[in-house]
Image (tube, rainbow, N blue to C red; front, side, top):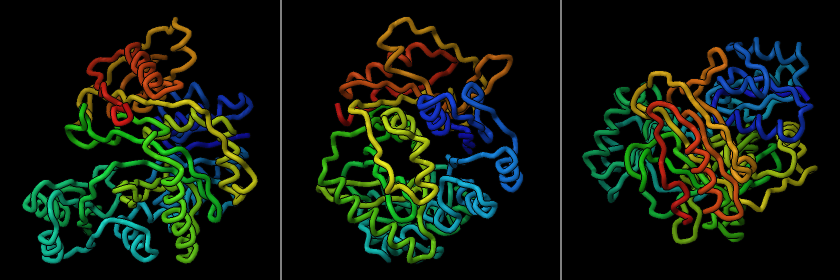
Length: 421
């Protein structure tokens, strides 16, 4: 099968790697890909979605998989479908679940899906008034896409009001902050859950936990994610069932009623409070680095799952998972997440230890290639993934692999999966 993958990060690399591990018969293309994806397929440079759809038709691409949120919110799925192409991801209309936090919160309220108490407004007076009714900390969110950085946890009322003012003025996040949500802070533990949906049916993957803060002990600024592990032992069958009944089923039913059936990955950010799942947010694509640890845990065909989900046939397949655990540790560049970093050559030691060779791998993200040399390009550079029969074994293996990767200014947390250990 010829498959096109949109995106350039570790998420897209991991999807491609999982597909390649099934069979070498698949031919992969990436738009734009990164400096390491050309080891798995062909990188393209076709930025216009209409031109990309023409390329897909002319080259008989049988399946397109969209990785990041921006193309989905921009309507790439609508463009491809209009040309009769098979593409995995939600339409522009359904992608509003991530594209607009205001749309998402109002959707949750309309369909009685448990979420934190909130107000959404562009009136600074109304937002301030609601803020004064809350106890601290207080959550302030910009409406639009902010690359995972549009959420402020304010520790005081003054800090919350400052964040509101800076968002509404456009200072913080430009147009993405022209509408703001203020909501109550929920105290519990956070989970990432991913449902593969075809508009009618769904398959719930194993629950993961990621680590958003830059430094150990969850200190420092929020990032796109510094590591993750799955499956988490903090979830039992009862909690999975509650998420299915109270979140996923009403969401799929609600989106059909809204005239925008949801197809693709529904990423549910859950806060578990006293055993009850409360929906923090929806995203409409895989989390990164969660995708990097979920893909190697799948023992059934990944490409077939994406294909069946794209053609409303999920009821025809059974998705199966390994009994192992996976831990992913992100290596970031020197100035992440504050500013860009000078490209640095990446040196990866040869792996001589059989245990490490067979149970770890690297998913590349922010890398470029020049004369066959890989460079860390800034941001999150790569993810070292370890597999094991226990979380500790998987974590230890992931960190052994980290020790074999070298570049100037490399930055990583040393406590990934501490919640479970």
